[in-house]
Length: 395
Image 1 (cartoon, rainbow, N blue to C red):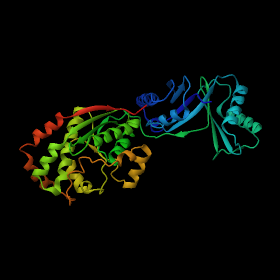
Image 2: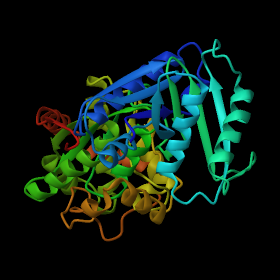
Image 3: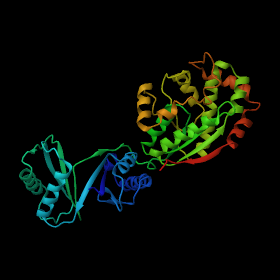
Image 4: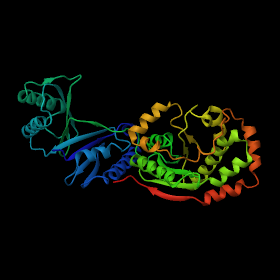
């Protein structure tokens, strides 16, 4: 029955003169999501509304599922449209619409009309009253409730007349690409894919960097990260995934530095390398999945020491979340089952039995002096090892 969708947005609606930029970004993301669907679609933008028109047969559920991955959408409304052939014809269309979509009509309703075309012969309130009367005559079991109706019937008078009553919740947020680009430090764990998802939800385009440590981490561990990036790309759009060989740096730190400080020093060099790659790729920030107190390297003191090597802002969207909140989001976005696959990442290989939880920056810097003979050369080798692949959601 439905051949069109009205796309509703929330935050974009309060933008000022640059509102059209956000609308254009949203249209672009809607078109990208629809490429994964069977059928042909046309996306139009008019007078504060975005419509998706089906030009061929399509799978309704598949289309809705893909639209639900587009940040910036607050609601997806399946609509029918009819040409303006007078109020009587419109009334019959509304009666048919209710009959087809609501087999159980023991419910309350309200009619809400938006008359964008001002030359229509009836005003909005008049249409509301008259259409309410038509519905009550056709379905005596239905009742009017203007405050908390079970069904809100929307009628929009434009060049055509649009009718809808269902609103499927969208993910909210801002359209990807409307707020710059940032580099995600992506491991094989639960947290970092969720962090990427949450920053993408604010309109930030995502690139990612993964630190690989062969032969201590396997190709399956790397594939796991690619699979996680693919899950996130369903929401964020294509992700440029940078893979860095980090083995030599890890072994050198293991050889030269106190073992209780291994993790914090390794993380400092990861952040340093990630920032260099970010700047080369015009990213304006770094993203991590850190949460205060979750592990030794994520105490407030540890985060302060890690942060010291960065000049770009570091976005930590999970900073105040507990683990179960993060797990719930990972299950919702489809990354959890992949994240818990038992393949080691480079952060779990060289782990001290008793890692420092309150590192002192001056002491850490003094111990990093032990690395000065070769570390710059090793960092450059790591940067030269960068392998980039574009990861896209599966159709």
